[in-house]
Amino acid sequence: MVETLSPREQRVLELAAQGLTDKGIADVLDISPTTVITYWVRIRGKLGNQPRPELVANFVRRTAEQELDALRQELQKHLDEIEALHNFIELAPEAILIVRPDGVIESGNLEASKLLNCREEDFAGLRIGRFIPPEFHEAHKGYRLKYLMDPRRLEIGHGMGVDMLTYDGRKIRGLVTINLAKSPAGDRVVVVLRALLQG
Image 1 (cartoon, one colour):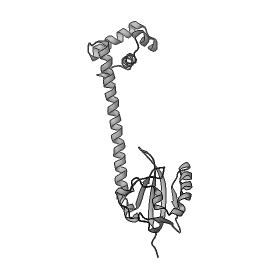
Image 2 (tube, rainbow, N blue to C red; image 1 turned 135 degrees about the vertical axis):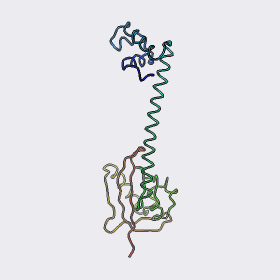
Image 3 (cartoon, rainbow, N blue to C red; image 1 turned 180 degrees about the vertical axis):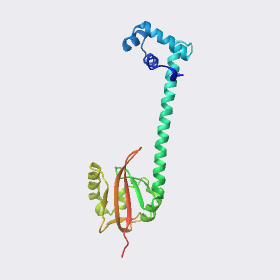
Image 4 (tube, helix red, strand yellow; image 1 turned 90 degrees about the horizontal axis):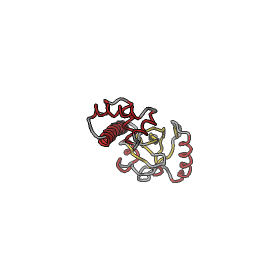
């Protein structure tokens, strides 16, 4: 197995896989060609008495398999993180939208669905402007770009509240909190919405 090779033996195989001759390997490692031959003898003793091309091919294949396995594990870790975040958001007691930096909504939870009168499956792909009154669209674009240059937790309308639109165009008043979150897929803006009781 490749794991049984010493670092120097692995290096010899790596250089051979790059197309170097024994002399080229010797030059890179600053050793004599005779020493390179000694390394080949050791390598064959550990991996089997095979021709050099086969040893190199098997080394490349095993190295690729190890790298692929590491990538699979990293991908699964990211998928687990995304699922855990999704579950947390879905169970949250407040309305939450996950928005990409370009203003496109990625997802919304059940509470957001109730507040904005929009089915959860319909949030994905909508622009956040769908829930902002038209008269504020231009101002919102500027605010969004400014926020992305200096992202932080930001409370909007905490006091008098701000106007929001439901999916069907009904105006409601509420409070908005936004914060930037890092995710495996890139930066996302977490938008928390709370309705103000109309009195």
